[in-house]
Length: 203
Image (cartoon, rainbow, N blue to C red; front, side, top):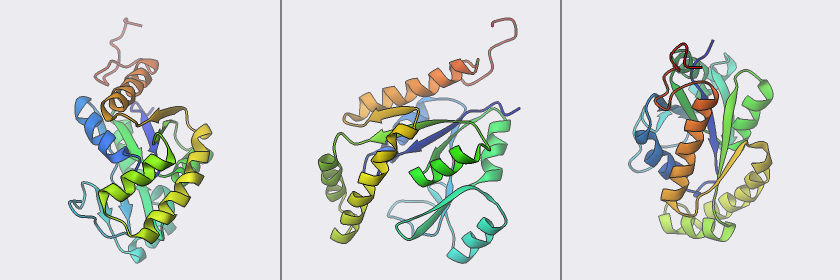
C-alpha cells in the first residue's frame, strides 16, 4: 500500500506556480517536489537535480522507450518527464510527492489509472494579467510570449478536469489555500497534519 499522497499541480506558464510551491513546501513536513527530466536548457539560477534533471533528447527518448516515465509530454518543442521509480519510492515510504506538470502530463496520469492523485490547477486572475507577468519577468522573446499566451488559453480549458482550483491573485492568500488543500487531503487519508499516520485507536 502506498502511504504518501500524490499531488498534481498544473498552471499556464507565468501563473506563479513555481513561486507558490517554493513558498508552501518549506511550511510542511514529509512532502517533496518531484524533480522532472527535461531536454530544455537550464534557465538562470536553475540547478541540476534541484529544479530539473537536464538531459539530452537521445537520453530522454531512451528512458521513454523503456517505460521509465510515469508521464511525459512535449511542451514548446521540449520534452518533460516524471520518473516512475522516484515517485513510487517516495510514496511507498509515506512521503507526499508534488508533481509540477502540464495539462498533458496530468491527463496521461489521470487516464492511465496507475496512481491516485489529488489534482490542483493554478490560474492567473486573467489572461491579461498573465501576459503582464510574462513580460515583467523579461525572460521570453515576443514570439515565445505569443506562443505561451496561445497555449495558456488552451490549458485553462482543462480546469474542469482538476479537483481544486486556486486563483493566484495574491501570493500569500493562494499559498494558504494550497497548504490547506494538502492538509485536508492528509486528513481524508487518516493522516496527521505532519503527514504521519493517525495512531491506532484514534480513528
